Amino acid sequence: MLKADGLDEAIIGIGSRCGQKDLIVYNVDKVIEILMKRDGMTDTEAVEFFEYNIQGGWHGEETPMWVRPCGIDEIEEEY
View 1: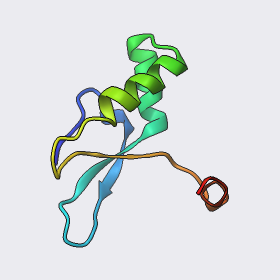
View 2 (view 1 turned 135 degrees about the vertical axis):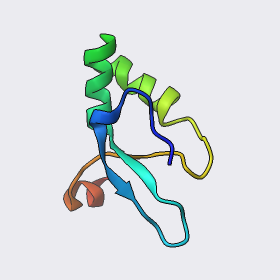
View 3 (view 1 turned 180 degrees about the vertical axis):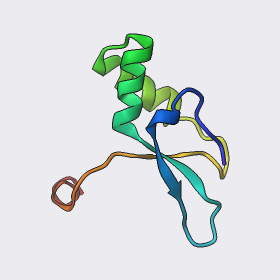
View 4 (view 1 turned 90 degrees about the horizontal axis):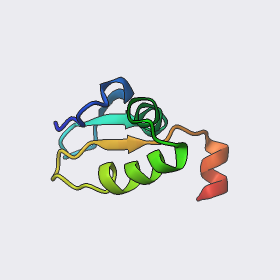
């Protein structure tokens, strides 16, 4: 499993899918908080940095999973 450097505090667990390798799962909200606190970014800067430089990177089958916690109401409304 691949691990994102400096984001251990945002790890929420291990993700599993049938026939796939297990992945480290990160809470996106916590990642954004870390970027803001550690690197002095604004919320907008942290989101843009995360989306382009972290979430946007593919490193093969073991690339981590990025989760934005939400409830069924938000899922139904958005999707």
